Image: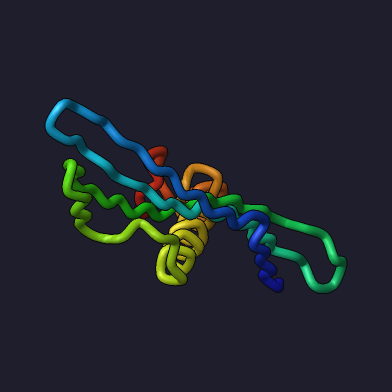
Length: 117
């Protein structure tokens, strides 16, 4: 058997939000990355796909701050980073192996909650 994997989706999104009042307000932003992977187990002698596992992973970062008449003060940064993409892909791979649509679950290695027996 050979195992093949593919990253089928990798998307990033950034959102900003604010809540204003008379003396200032709250401001913030959120960045997120979502990854989807597919893993196929193929029988080498026939080329037949024996098993397919699907997985999804995400990574988020939130920042917030306060705004007033004098300006704004932010804590943290919500920009999408390489680390967020790496984390989302890593989580998707783990899900494709152990998740509800994962290889081990389909093989009966995991119980119904996705935990190894």
